[in-house]
Amino acid sequence: MGRHLRAEPETSQQTRGVAPSHARGPLRAGNDDRQQVVDQLQAHFVAGRLQTTELESRLEQALAAQTLGDLDALLADLPPLSTHQEDRLLRDDARRGHRDPKACGEQSFRGHATSYLLVMALLVGIWLVTMPGGYIWPIWPMMGWGIGVASHGLAARRQQAGFSTL
Image 1 (cartoon, one colour):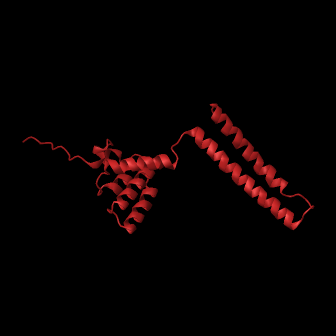
Image 2: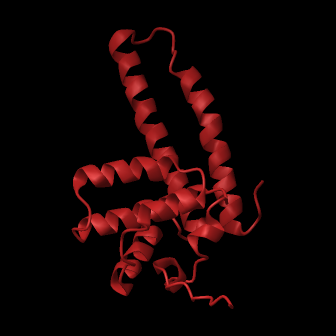
């Protein structure tokens, strides 16, 4: 008597173009894999498929997952996301930081320089209130942190000009 092989039912992972969980199971999970599952779990929570306590539990498991199989198990009892929900997740990824690197470098430097100037103004203000005309101690944090701001500014300029940075 011959064996009859049945085709396995299509899983949600196969419909998304991802290898079945048994093939992915032992592969190590990366940060991007974990974040993708966290985003999907949050989308399912918003859709009303998960309760708050269940979401919290699954998020903890997703962030601690070592393999892709561990991550697949967290989504196994949930239906695939609709195209609308997947589009929203992609927009969220774009908003979270997958932007033009040149714009990110300039914006990052602007934030760094702004925080430097505000903190230095605070330190000078403290110096003026506590010992006006005395030893100018804010010069040391200005120089120390200033070196970091200056190197960040140079790196941002190089990146904006198209030179590669290490």
